[in-house]
Each structure stands twice: as structure tokens, then as C-alpha cells.
Image (tube, rainbow, N blue to C red):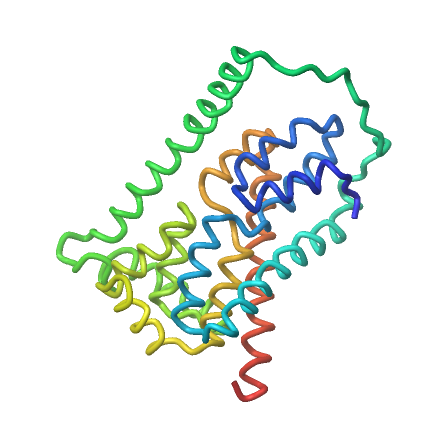
Length: 277
């Protein structure tokens, strides 16, 4: 696939959070290998996405099938990364030998560990926070403007955008309410459930019941599949831009994830409907 063991380690790290996984690619000397690795990392099923999937599977799937549904999303996460690497490895040719030099390892001092830990955490918080704050402010404005509109309603700017995108997302079974939640998910995937709570005006088990009444399992799985593959959160995109130092590569990564997400959801949704589900 054009990757090496370090790429696989970063891919696994992405299942916790994509941001430190993208930053971890600094250990690679080859720039082309770094770029290809950064292209596949956002497909890792991060803990933020996991929260969304656990909530939805609990609402719409029976306990016996919910675990299989969640496991299938993990498999599709790996499949998306593998497919991406296979498709684009020829554009990111790597001539670095698959050899890792082992330096003499020494146990770090307490001072070194504290300083290095503080430096990494500070960099992460500084980079991620400003984009998350800006994104949250933007989401609030979209849901509360114009002033005459009911917050998070179809008359708000967020609702207007959801209606505008509906012709594109209707073929994959995503409703206007889910469309708005996807827009919020661009800021941070954890916001998706909160967005649904605001849109429906419900929370907890009441929101579970509302989703179960308005969606069937095909729509729910299509929504989760799209959420799994489409663009990562703002902080991950900011990190991708910073680490790649290439705006064009960042835009390409976002565009490819959106295209792949739509195609995967379209194939699943239309096939399931054709089979009578």
C-alpha cells in the first residue's frame, strides 16, 4: 500500500484522536510517505465518532445486532484507509528503505518528561482551541440567525443550508435534520449528538425514541457511514494543514473524503432499498 510500520502505528493512534496521529507523522523522513500517511489517518474511527455511533446504534438497533453494526464500522474504517492508500500510492512514491535505525535508548529524566509533555500539550491546545472556538461561535450564529427565526429551526441559516444541501444528500437517505447535524460535526464530531438534541428539542431516552420513530435502520447506517468517512473535525484539518504545509493537499484530502463518503453511503443505501429494506 506504499506505507510502512510507522504509518500503521499512526493509523492505530488515530482511533484515539486524529490530531496527535497527524502530528506523529513527524517521525518519518520521507515527505511523500508523510503525505500518504496523513491522507489515510482521518479515516480512523476516532473516539469522537465512536460516541455518535454508540448513541445511534443504541437507539435504532437491537442489543444483539448493535455490536455487529459497530464492529462493521471499524472494518469499514480500515477498508477506507486501505482503499485510499492503494489508489493514491503511485502519486506519493516513496523511495525510503523500510529500515528503522535504532538509536541508543536511555530512560528520560523526570524534568525531560514534564517539559516535553507540557510542550506537546500546549501545542495541541493552542492549535486546536482557536479553531474549535471559532467553529462553535459560527454554529451558534447559524442556528440563531436571523433573529426572527426559532433557534435551530428550518428558518435559521443552518436550516436554510440544510435544505439547500438536501438534494445532494437525499439519495443517501439523510434528512434535513441529519444534514444540519453533519454541518455541526465539521466543527467537532462530539457536537453531532448535541446538535440533534437542539434540533429535536429532546435529550437522553426521549431523543433516542424520536430518532427511532423518524429513521429506519438503513437511514441510520447510511448516516453513520457518511459520518465515519467524511471530513475530519476543524482541529484535525488545521493540524493537517500545519503538518503538510500545503493548502492544496489539505483541500484534496477534504474533497476526497467527502466524495468517498457520499459514494459509500449511496451504494449502501440504494442497494438496501433495492433489496426491499
